[in-house]
Length: 149
Image 1 (cartoon, rainbow, N blue to C red):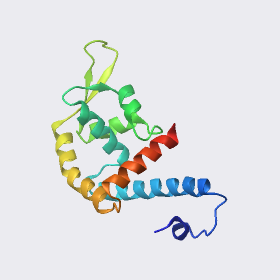
Image 2: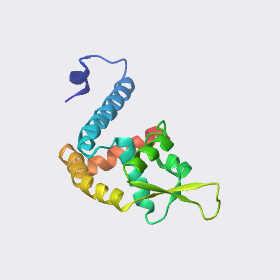
Image 3: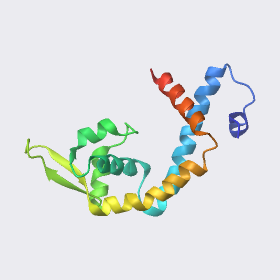
């Protein structure tokens, strides 16, 4: 669906304004679809992001600050997200061996199993919803990277 149809607006000041609106609309659409996909698993997209970060570090633990640096949503409260994941027994806290004042976070076996369950659903969400070729996806990635520079 074209952005004009989605937001019921026929004219834009410029192609740049249209691009801006299109990116914001698409980002929100993707986020809403992610929420729907993750809801049956009882986690939010932000919690999913934390689990993926920790899974990438497994078997090592990392600090909350390192998690924050890697998060997609920089406005998320990483400490609160970790607390919720700990309550669900998906992560655990460890005292840092180099600095006893620092607490590191590590994904649990239960967290890894949940990611494995989610992987199939997220992969199909990403692939089925995509109407782009791999080459078009690569070009779009280049353009979005260029936009942030």
